[in-house]
Image (cartoon, rainbow, N blue to C red):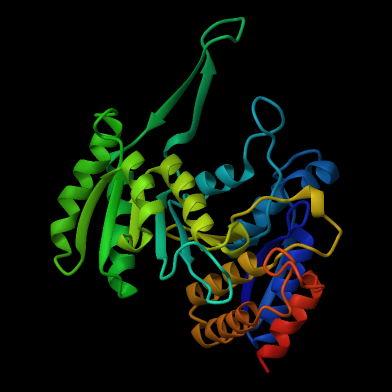
Length: 337
């Protein structure tokens, strides 16, 4: 029996998470779900977006399965709960795989890229302030440490080796940001020779974006600092059909959080239209993390069958479909039998 903190999230979160839980339970894995709250749902109920009760649950389980949370844009609202959780539990490795689905038409075939993003430092460290009383000059500080760079780059190379990957590309801006990005690149160059079986490449971030939309097949595993990884992971999602298909893992030394990487989509909340694929695949990543490989493979095979057949999928995957979130979840459960 595995104990998992379940955070259903905001907007479409509860509907897609209910399907993911239903599918995971149907796989035969024994999980004790401990429901907790974060984001707007928590703020409305507890007066805070991240209640102590939620933190206490994760402190105990060291494992969370989370739906999308609403975060305000600009100076309004509370700070990102995703960032707060990553920093609180030192979930330093953000892993987002993007791979073509045969049943989803895209501009490129054979895309299979994994973004490994440093998750606790960089410009997302939250060191921001105004320099004047009028708040007309703002400053953000990027933090890049040798220790943080070493562990994420080691993680990327080990991930490549453990998953039969052939190449690691470090994406950087060391030509301009010579200290922060320069340190990250220097560490990558130091670590790469320890993995002679893995090809090492380096690309300046803007050139990497250009190359990715010209020929994404040249990329395998990409490692980069926080903000660059955030941007590249959405770019790779666009190459394979959108954020509705992309799972995410946040890994630390003794805790982990698995999630869909898309937003809470308030415009379709309650309409039974949300695509649950991303969070289901995040559940697959979580099961692999738990060592439940047979159940993870069983779910992945069923999801691939349903998506590739294209009949019982949400309208974003097939505009001719009359299938909703619940019906797609039911089809995946049926495909596991």
